[in-house]
Structure formats: structure tokens, C-alpha cells
Length: 190
Image (cartoon, rainbow, N blue to C red; front, side, top):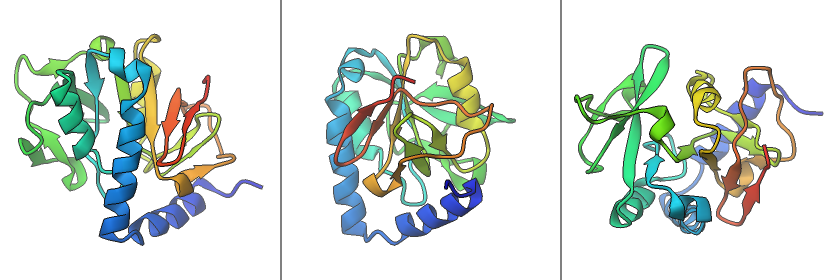
């Protein structure tokens, strides 16, 4: 039996907080190295990444590698109940935004249209093997995944203990196409 979203979220957030700094760093790097091997990411020109928080898979390593590969990298900024993506050239050029999460500074000419993004990295508290995702409850990424270009790829990043057999799903929930943990890559065919 699948538990409630609230129960699953609370349990996995506790588990994530319990990671030591060295465990977190090592696991995050392993996730990043596997993600960088994805053919869809290698061929993407424009990539949407997120700034990690609360012991999520650390994404600074990915940002550095993607910039070295000359990818156009965008990070989200909360605008009302939606996310807008802005191109970012430097990881340290972010400012505290929604719930204290570092966000890019909104500047004319730096906003990236959703239909121009080839590859989306998506955070989550939990994923299942069918691509279903449990976020923090705001629905921001469900709205993005529902509006993205169909040929783009959505990739969930998580630690292996965040990958479950099944998650509760509601009509507004949007799955991801690929999930990367430190141990495996799952193509969900969502």
C-alpha cells in the first residue's frame, strides 16, 4: 500500500537531512557523473537546472560541467505561482528568492522561453520507476512539465533511497522521462 504524500515526504526529507556532508557530496557527484552521460543532455543546447536546497542532489558540479560544455544554462525564478527561467553564467551570481532559495536576477534579454529549453533537470523528494514525482507541494514543476515542448527531456535527480516502487499520483501530477540516482539511470517512457 502506498502511503500518503505527506507521510512519504516527511520520511524522505528526514532521511535526506541525515546524510553527512561527505555522503551528500559523494552521492551528488555520482548522480552528476551519470547524468552527464545521457545522450539527450549531450545533444541539448539549452538546459534548465535548479539550485539545490535542503540536502537535495547538489547541482553546482553539473552547472560547472554544463558551462564547460558551452551549454546555455537557465535557473528558475519564482514569479507568482509559476517558474520563469533565466540564463545564468555564474553560479555565485544568484540572490535569495522564494523561500530563501537562490535565484537568478531577472534581467531583460536573459529570460529563456520554455519552448527554447531542450533538457530540464527536475528536483524531487521522491520518484517512482514510472517517472512519477513527489515534490515539495507547490506544484511549480508540474506546471512547467505540463507546458514544456514535447520533444524536450525532463530528468529527475535523486538519491537511490528516494526512488520508490510506487507513488500516489493525482491528475495534475506530471511524470519525468528519465531518473538518475547515484546507482542507475531509469528511462521511464512517460
